[in-house]
Length: 270
Ligand code: KIV
Image 1 (tube, helix red, strand yellow):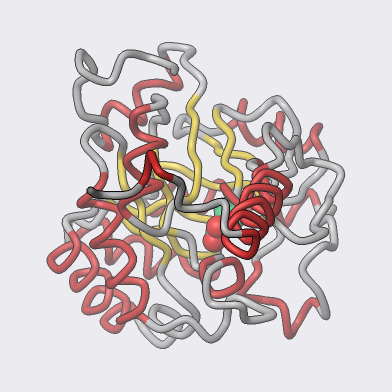
Image 2: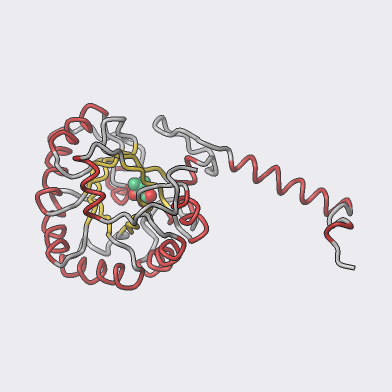
């Protein structure tokens, strides 16, 4: 286990931001329900992201586009229930903030009011600056997300293309900071650009596929725990093989039941 769960104080947005100046690297992991948020919190992560990746890794869709606001709220409530210390950040799903700043405030407001989460995340930088500013002025903390934006899958033609346009990336990250974002996710960008952006910003950068120079890292939990089915990008490090363990355990259970070996005497009531 990481940091002892009992003597930790709760992570807040100001503490999250202060970590950068204090030189503390931030650990973020996705979570979609109370069981796993409780475990990750106990292991000492700083932040839990209720990512719209749940559209793919929980709901089985091919992209992040189908998940709805109500579904995100449903999962975020479970994550908040299981968590005690980590900062809970909830993704704003596709087309719940792009229409107008007013739409974004109404939907982000629902997320904070109905889930108890501390912040929202939205994909975009310069083109979402007006919305980030409006949310910040409404006291809704925003984590921005630049680089490869999975909600742009139809424009990009896929979700694994490394984003190399340095001017665009720097402008997006800087615009997000200037508009009031408290942190920015950098996804799938070259390490040198991520390092330069991290040096330029006073808010934390959280990398995924952006190298070691960011202020923190985020991964989809199913990927780092080895629960995924064949997803193996260069940036991913697997810390466990839970898929293998689950397959093995369930196969042994099935064998025992079929052979009449489970339940045994020790599992039976007199
Ligand atoms: O939805 C998600 O899980 C994300 C992370 C990959 C950053 O946005």
